[in-house]
Length: 91
Image (cartoon, rainbow, N blue to C red; front, top):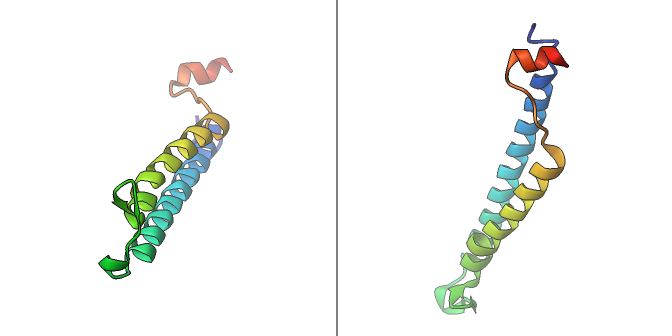
């Protein structure tokens, strides 16, 4: 089967781009809160559950948001594709 006619490559490329988008979103979220709130003087920090606000939002909330986003994206946008040529020929 030629690589250009194989529909699995377009699916893999689309899912790779979605993955890159998630990584970029995660980095922007983390960087924005870590350096946005964390660049102030330590005496001016606000604390949430004993953590500095910049750490709470960038690391704790960021992980929770990414876990929910990844779960949602995988369930809604990712598809199962056969890796065996035998399964592909049956279609």
